[in-house]
Length: 530
Image 1: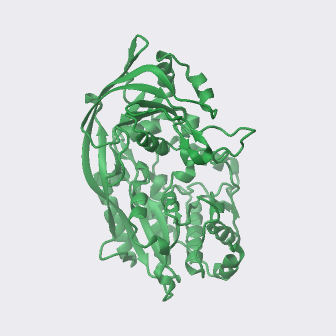
Image 2: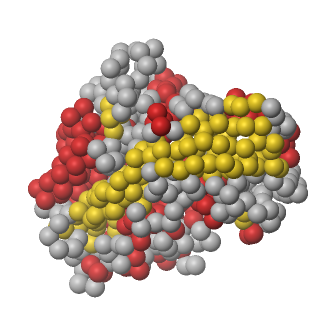
Image 3: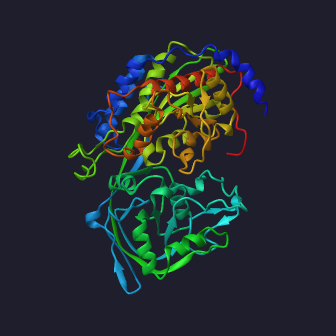
């Protein structure tokens, strides 16, 4: 891999960084996209259509071209599934007892198949971390026939050991630790269902985040593979009680699941009951506009800037004591996540349209990220631009609303030469690259760039810096950390007093990096197996 010539050939381009990304438009877009009028930009809700209409109108007004034909929209056919708790009941029978956890406070579940009514009478098996990975020499199933069984599974993956410090991806969570993988694997195993055991440390978020995602309608790609008939989560307390009811000990099973010789453990427990779902099909839309390249040959290639426009939408109002000051407010505005990324892309497009690069540049707003990267998966499966001619994807998700910083984030940039170019752009911009830290929450797999990586396109999500500029860095870090309490809550609202210099810094860097890629003689390449 000849990384040095790639950097040397582009270093002169860094001096030609894009003009400044304007704050006024970024702030205006952010305020509008996070406004109550858009009702939280929920998939399949009225706010989604308003958002799509706004985005395509803005791209047209800025002078970007539709990528194909005359429309800025790419239809993404979805299957919508909403659990009907009032008509559903799941009980666990065994040990001479019957437990019926309450939907919402104790258990959440839905279906991975398009069936309005389902009945269950299935044995429950504790299946460790629910992982089958020959390349890692790990198999939690050991050949057991799991057809028709309900799996109780731990979140994340076995921890590294002194003997195996690089197990899976070492301190970084691999895709096998993601809940999406575990659902996919349960379906491949023919299981009747899968329930994940939630803890805040293992999931990296609290039970309210899980509940908010499952109280509402859930979506999957209409053209994608089916999931398991039952998919869901249980709280740790409920899991502990159920395992005990079934004759086991959750803590002992956790320890056993860390070993390679672990075998699935049938519990003296059966899940019985019914699951009722409201099922529908619908289209949601990715929105894309392109700035044609200026080079007669390289304009056939494209650099993509992406951000997801969806959030959680409008649902039930939170309990009065859960979010003081937001009583009666059932709107999940998603100001940071991810009105900020969309606003940045629009402001970047306003600058980029006046400074065409050699390659074409696409500004892509994807749907359904909160539902499992659905819009970006659909794009990768049916791209508007050939993937072989896509140089890179630079993704923005949840921008820095705190303050400007001395550094910029390039998480997992070392997986392709895109990271090397990013480091060069950062240096030319007077920025350091934020030091790497263990990705224990699996953030690499939770943003839309990952769909491009899976499709063979070098991609990364540009992160905000952490070394904040200001008189009181400790207070700024505390402000950033406090966002964890607003993540996926009704309190993620736009604040007009925000200092947007950090967002502008992140947007400017992303545009500068994108234009460096767009002007380089060769495309970025992967360094190692993805």
